[in-house]
Image (cartoon, rainbow, N blue to C red; front, side):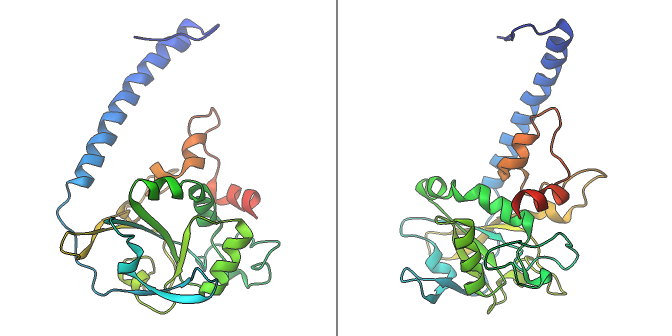
Length: 246
């Protein structure tokens, strides 16, 4: 059953009804894609139980294995490859205050990744409450990552550093030149305890059409998907993130 809103024109209603049919088709396709993601055959076994740097409960740098990131009774781990340091081609200004303000630009955090993690910070308890585990993996030293996280006010998101292992290189979170890549990787632990890659945002490596964003994590970027619903749409993300977050 259709709806109407105050003072809308017949032209608006006709155009909105046409668009609604596309939205219904998009919903159907999104559900179908999600079902196919769940139905993928088992991915490759992780080549090693990677050891990451993190900040322990006592506030001291410590080590944690990939297998230890799965809380008891859980079998899913979502790891975002945080571009910290940023890509060398990113010439947006760095933080103007806080612990990273004095870092060389190329050593600082990516503004876009930072915005995404800001968006996720409040969602983490809900995601983990539903049985998944989630963390962000940087390449910068864990002390820098932790200091920046504290400055941003992140309390829920687990931060890791892969400075001393090959995880990011092995899972395409780092290219052959050592530049960081913002891929999202999902791992599954089977009943036999074996951890395998379940899914990764490989859309990142499929060139976008002119004027498009990569959108490899497009459905999990609340800030941009909200703006997609507005008359102005999403602004140039590369330029706007600099002004908004630093």
